[in-house]
Structure formats: structure tokens, C-alpha cells
Length: 546
Image (cartoon, rainbow, N blue to C red; front, side, top):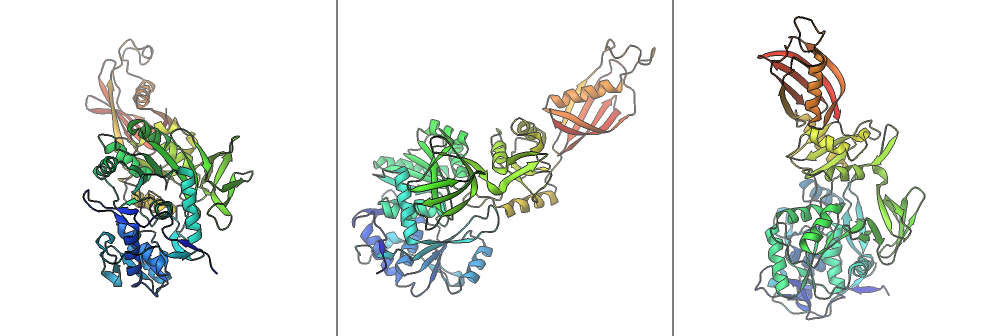
């Protein structure tokens, strides 16, 4: 007989499964939630696949439960784009589509489970352990998104991994900002709550005011609120909230969490911040308290086997088979792990080696840089590019700051300013999206001339370079004017790497005021020295960080 595992194994019949948005709303208890799921499941059979496009947490949860009860496999779209929906329709013909609001292409609207007035049902149905419960898609950060099938038993074991790493979960309420169609969202806001008896807040706070309201409400009820979020959302909340929210724990994933952000949040909000290392293929695999340590601890029951080059295979826990990771690690003497970046993102330039992840971290550590990413346009490129969101910066200032953090061989050319990066809802950046954004920006000439540096001065008659320079009719030597140009550059963290062209067209006499203007663009600069409304010198040079 096929083994079966309970849908809501962590709950009793009268335990709250969902907590409503409204302060005066009534919690949805387990037996009424199951009644709603069983009733809705009757509408889904005999479909093999159910595409769950719901964005509202309560409707997503009901749709998922009903699909599993009906024997469907949940198909979780990688994005909300029309192209993604068309791809799923072609890949899973005949699949039923579930969404918050019905309409287009026969999609079925999922009812609000809080409005269910039918019969209570208990105990919760059992789901076959080997049932393919969900199909998710990788982010495509290193290529094309691909489907990953998850058996119900694997998802249940993943919930145990979560509880073992972060428990105990008494009096906890979970709220998430992450789409549940993503592996991190599915694990932390659906399966882990179901299996560990933890209610989910039927809200998805995307704005600071939403988070503040939710935290105040649950703190007032004596519940511990755990926030499941991304580094991008956390950065927004931390920068926007005027007072600390009442949170008991924050768990972050989907992209690397900057240690400085984690430390700032822990200090300012007095809350612990943990980071999950995981992937669509394996779910949660390791965790760390990022503000306190860079070391990851493997999840309970999981074992990392490292090769000499740092490549890793993970076994145990929720994994049905050994998983070869796309990342490199280093094991520390205490058995914990240091993440050394993706195997595929190692770059070598001029005999030097680093990783795109390390370069991205350096770029994001620059004060005033809101977002940014390095781009390798083609494998083996002799020069990297970068996209950056930094309204208060110009190319020269970003490069000067980068030169203090990375080897100059890896300074990006071009460095392209954009309004935002093409991240998905979880903060992921696919390699394809980065390259496309770079090409679009270059085509639109968003790599704008950066700004003009302006300076002024005079050369006094007692300057040591003047004696012997045209006796009886002294003029300022061209090398002195170039030295003044270089001084202006140094004041802005720049230097002259190579002089491409220079022309001296009009003499400047000692004591004559002059103005220097240097127009700095992505790689070169044009300068002019003007005295008495006449250009005395001009030229072009390659600049470098001072």
C-alpha cells in the first residue's frame, strides 16, 4: 500500500490555519479550511495539472490544498508574463488554471476561504507520499528556467528541515513578501506552516506601512511574527520605516543578503536576521545569521560533500537523490561552510581570478549604490560590463570606489547607469535578462556622458617653471596646465592613464585667470583650458582611478 502523509499534519481541528487581513476578522480554523478545500477540489478533477496563479496568500493556499486533494500536480508559473503563461499552456495542455479572479482563457477564480460557509471536514486528507505535488521553475540566473518536480514526501521532509533549523515555532505567525510560486515562498509560507502547525497571515506586505500594521496587530495579540522576505524587500522596509516593527524573526532568501544590511536591521530593529542558502532543485539546504557570521550551517539531516575545487554534492534530508550544486564552498574547521560563488560565474582577466558574486557584492557595498550587477557579455570576455542604479553617483565616482574594493583588472567598461535592474519578484537576475538590459541601455545611449568637472586658477609670475621659458615674454608651460588638469581629476578620485591628444592653441600669461573643464564619460575624458574667453589648451585622455 502506498504511504500517505497528512495535508495539515501540524494542526488540530480547531487550530487557526489562516489569520485574516482585517483586525476584526475571524481566524479560519483547520476543519473549516479543509471543508473549503474538499468542496473546491470537486471542481478540479479529473485534471492532471493545476496552474496556480493566485497572488493572494489565502486563495493560493486554498487552491493548492484543493489541487492536492483532487490528485492534481500544482504547476507554479515562473513569472506573471504572458510569455510564461503561453509556455505553460503548451507544456501542460489541458491544465486547469486557478487565479484570484477568473476570466481569460477559462481560468477559474478561487473563492475566498474566509467566506466558506459549508460543512467542516476533519481529519485532513492524506496525500500519497510519492505524488508529484508541485512543479516549480528555476530562476534562470545562469541560463534558461527549467522545471523541477517535487514529490509530496520531499516537501514534507523540507518542512521538517525548516523546523529543525529555526524552531521551536510556538505562538508563531508567518507573513511573507515572497511569491509562493517560488521555492522559498512555497516552503516557508505554505508547506512549513501546514506541517508545523503555524498559521499564515493572509497578507503580503509589499510596503512599509503594510508591514508596520501587521506587526503591530500580531504583537498586540501576543503572537510572534516571523517575516519571510527578500534582501530587496528588507532593504526597502529598513530604509522606509520610521520606527522598528514588532518582529520576532526575519528569514531571508532568493539572493545574497549583504552582511551590512543584516547587521543594520538587527541593530535598529532588535530582531534576529537569518539567511537561507537553497535552490529550486533542493529547497532549503543551509542557513546562517548573516550579520554575525559568513558561515553557513547545513540543514538538519543534510550532508555536504566537497571536492578539491569546492564543488559540492548534498545528500539526505528532503532530497530524493544526491544533488550536485552549482556553487562552490569551502569547509571550515568547525564543519560549517563558506560560500565561494557559483561555479559558472568565475571570471579570469589578465591572469587574475574572481567571481561575479564577489564583484556584485563589492559594487553593492558602495554607499549610494541602490542596486547593481556585473555582466559577462560572452564567456571569456577580456572586459566586464556592469549595470548600476545610483542616482547620486557618476561613472567616475563609482569606478573610484570600486577600485578600492576590487582589482583594477575587473573594473567594468562600460559601466551603464539604469533606472532599475530587471529583477523578478524574488529579486533574481537571470543572465539573459542582464545581457538584454545592458544591450538595450547601450543602444539607447543610457551610458551618458557623466558630468563635467570644473576648476579654475592662475599661475603666479614667480612659479619655478617660468624662468627661462620665453625670456622677456613668459607664458605658462603646457606641462603646468596639464598638471593643473591632473590636480582637478585627483580631487575627484581620478587620474590620467594615457594622453590621447593635446593641443596648445593660445598662450596664457602669468597671473591670467583660467578655467579648466573636464567632461568625463565612461572611459575617456575631454578637457579644455580657457583664458579670456579663448581656448588655450584642449585634449583627450583615458582616465583611471587615482
